[in-house]
Image (tube, rainbow, N blue to C red; front, side):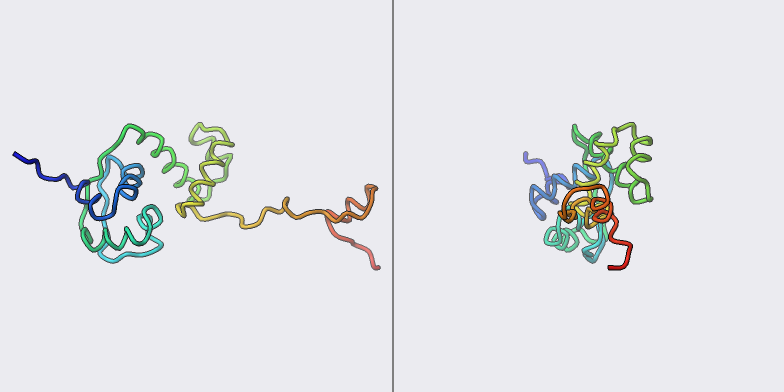
Length: 153
């Protein structure tokens, strides 16, 4: 006798393996509400992409879907906690203190979350990337290059 598909198998058939894996990683062990209309700024869209989001909303819109947990759910739960703390305005140090993770690890997670669109980017340009003018030696020139000339020319 054949077993009926589970809901997650049906989700996988609609949005594909990669998008389903991302849902399991991020929401494993929880119910998710699928909106009836896709939106590109929705967390699901950031996570699985708009094509998969459209398909998910078309098939499961306005429904609550159970997403099963996996063995590495704890790691993803940590990422979710870090994302939430950054969204609330925390900095690397305060997030590190709250989670018990090193500041460097928190910064790596922030970069991953920014790249996936799950946390807004803080800086678009690193001020240290701006090259200094090379005008010769001396402390005065280095100071002027760093802060700009202050006197009349």
